[in-house]
Length: 318
Image (tube, rainbow, N blue to C red):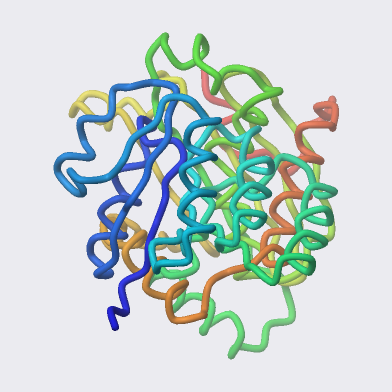
């Protein structure tokens, strides 16, 4: 009997979907069905040309249910979810109630109370929600976490995090520019960094917002073992001039006590590694996401502080 697992994918036309298709393939499994209201999904041919494809959710739902009821080995084991952020909660519920486990892109959900509802459905169905928290699998982060846990310090680590991933005018016109759908900048491009900080430095103790608008956000976070100044942006002007002049449109920097954490490599196969861990029963579940989701929900709800004490250096840039 084949050990291959059967996958369905929601959000096949999205930016991140090809990484999930590649991960399904690289782990030796098969994509049987995919859904997206947008039909620009030719990328499927590079991975699973025989997959059934649907542009209407109702037809996709019927197909998945038909496979489940046929009881002939063709039922869906995992549903990979790459849909817009505000739909993740609904699509995870669909996966669990369809008798499948879910694999969901970040952010898992937009609000912490959504996690409680999903925990109830996991208990009802006996299925599991797995999430892509790929930075927890990055070699640099694994090494840093080991170092942080083993050393004894009398003071907290001083951390600066800056991430600028410039986007064109399309960004604010898409669902990503709608806070109700994306959760805003901190949620859409920052949630996995906030998860990483919690993973490295323990429980969150303080959360102050210094700046929050459509294209950038910044603030201060304090954890058990670190004080963090953070800055996130999709504005090309926030890429340092020297990097911009060399044609760079993105900039990522994380320093711990003034020492840069090397992040230039090790990203390309993190989805493959995430899938391998999930299939081995070592996936990150709902509760592992709670602190990061609480963090971004609080940033979204909070008013920017009038003072920028402990503000990230990028805040002072002209």
